[in-house]
Each structure stands twice: as structure tokens, then as C-alpha cells.
Image 1 (cartoon, rainbow, N blue to C red):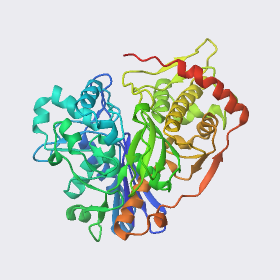
Image 2 (image 1 turned 90 degrees about the horizontal axis):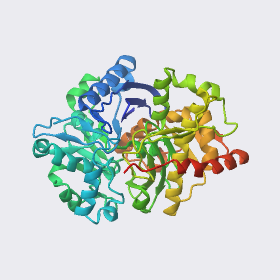
Image 3 (image 1 turned 30 degrees about the vertical axis):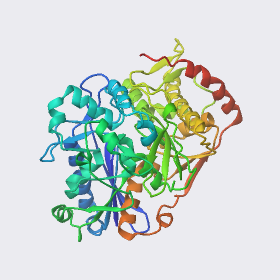
Image 4 (image 1 turned 45 degrees about the horizontal axis):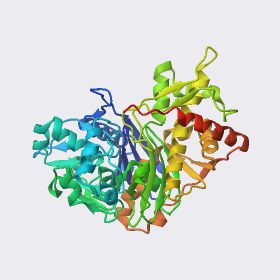
Length: 481
């Protein structure tokens, strides 16, 4: 048996997977995010631990025998968050999350301090990444910076609590701006530019390698007959790639979670930081992921549901299975700023084209289309790096909507494939990494592609209609700085 634990932004999801790679049980607990000021986004690390322990306690109550047999654990997590620990390894402040936009000034300072940043890290300095957050802390909370002895990404903090060891995998570390992505090791120059050193960093491992073991007292708490191995694991999107078997060059996939991304595994670095294409190490050796990322995806639908006081399923139901034409309303999904291709943390969303005749369905459709148009921006940025996409799989909570996937196929003008259980892809991928860390099996024998249950083919008329709409949608963007 193997456990996959995905520490997401909105929830912790834990799955229990057997030797035949069947998910036999899953548990989820919600997480809360706070915004002390506009553009800020933080979470208390204590709730990550409480939520994770709650999922495992629930699995013990419902599947005690299966949980007892767990041999390996894989962790997946939201990327980029800055968890600052003191000399006693206690958090000094709430974690600053990936969608926090406060450190735009520090991004410019960081690139001035270290001109080789883009070449070495494969990425442009942006507020979402971890390093600029530390410069902000140094400037605005100097007593916190001085007391910081260890900087961990969210899932590495969870691993520290589970095991007592500070270890991170190279895929998650890629989103810190402290990793030399070609060497898959910390960059001393990058750390120095942030006022840090290797002493502030966890030990690095590959995602499929054993990292540590579960504390004996926790193994006893959950009735496990051994102390399971904990794998290096992965950032949420690389873990999602493992879950759907995207381990070969060109196996493109779309993530429709709280945030969104269009990602392509490669066996070489094809960086394009000037167009805000992200370069991350994959969770398996010798592979990387090139990604276009948007800060708001399924969270846009959740925002609309709160606005209308309706369940998301209630909003989607009147749309049917596929669009008949583009919505007359346009939506910019920049509720938390944007990454690819704009790198604009202060831009905000917009609804355009409203009239007395606009109904709720038109607005809902516009929100789905706006997110998808933003993914088309990611597609074009990847194309500028020489990466073409002929088809894509889709994971994340948004993959449950057939209407949205039809929009995606027509806007991107490629076939879109859906899997059963695609919304738990990151946790399942983490479980696969936990298995690899225990068994040492060939990666291709474990990370197989699940059966596709549905393919959404582009319709020529809709492809043309959306292609005609896209330039006007792009013209709505106006930088605010």
C-alpha cells in the first residue's frame, strides 16, 4: 500500500493506493487562506498539519488494515510558498503563498543583484516565486529575517513534521529561484543574492528517491506495521504529470485547479523566461517541465459561485455539454494578477460587454472562456520556445466540466483528453513516487498513463469563432503600472 498526500491551496487531499494502483480510499480537508492586505495571500502552516493528520485519522477509522500496510508515502504540494522557521524549527510567521503579489519591487532588485538569474534558474523573477518573498521579509520584517534559520516550501514543512528531517525535491525547489535547474542543485550565487546560504536550505533529492521515513510515533498513531519511506515527492503540477504518466517529451497536459497551467515535459531545457515560460525540474531524473502558468483558473468559477450565491454545479448546468458560440461577454481572469505572459501582479479581472440582456449563463460561459483564452496565451508563449502541442490531457477540479473541456479543445484547437479521477491527479502521482522510492521499479512500469475516458475534439466552426474572438480579448488587457 502507498499513500499520496497533496498539500494544495484549498485543501489537503490524501489517497490510499494499492499494489494494483487502485485508489481504494481518499480523504480531503479544506484549508483557509487569508489576505491581510490587497494582493497578499497567506496560510498558517499549523492548519496544513491539522488537515493532513485529520485525513490520516479518517483513513485509519475507515481502512485500518490497508493503512497498516503502507510501505511508502509521497508528498505533493503547492509550490513557491515561503515557510520561515526559527532555530527551534517553529514557523516565525504565516507562509506567504504562490499567489501573493507583494514583492514586485524585490523582483527587480533580485535581477539587478544577480544578472545571471534567468540563465541559471530558467525563470524570470516574479512575486509568486520564493526568493523575492525573502527580500521583502528582509526589507519589511527585518527581525523575522534575522531569526530565520531554515526556509521551507509548504510540503517540505509537512515532511519535517512527519519525519523530523528537512528535505526537498528538485521539482518543487525549481520554483524557488534558488535552484540551478540544469545541475539540479542549489545555486550559491542565487542564495547569496537573497542574503541566504545553503545552511538555510533543506537537503535535495529527486522526486522518486527515498528522502526519509515517517516518525515512529506517527506510524504507531496510524497503526502502521513499519515506518514507511517518504519519497522526495514533487510540486503539485509535476506530481500531476506523474499521476497521468506524462513522463516523456511532448506529453502535454493542462491543469485546471485553483490556478492553471499548460505544461510539457522535455528531456532538455527550453527556457523562455522573457515570455514568462517557467522551467522546472521534473519529478524524475533527466527530465524537465516547461510551463505557462496562470494565477486563477477554477478559482474564477469559485469566485463567481460566491458572487451569485450558487453552487458551481448549479452555474454550469444550464450551459449544457458544449458551447454553441462564444459568449457575448468577455472576462479577464486576472483576479490575483497574472504570470504567463504578462508577469503583472497588480492587474485585475474584468467583465466586458455587459448589457441589459446579459444573463447569468452568459457570464458563467465568459468566465470559463476567459480562463481558456489565458491558457491560449500560455500555448503561444511555449510555441515561442519551440514547443508545439498537438494534443493535451487535463487534470484538476475543472476537468469535471464537459462544457469547459469543449471550450478548451476549441480555443486551443487540439484534442483534449480526460481521465477518470483526474481531479486527484497530484495525490495519485505522489503515491506513485512513494512507491518508486520503496521498490526502485522502472519509472515507466509504474508511471503508466491511465485510461482516457473521453476525448473532446475541436469543431471547425467553433475553432474559427474563438480564433476571431481571441485578439479582441487580448486587447482588453491594460497594464496598471
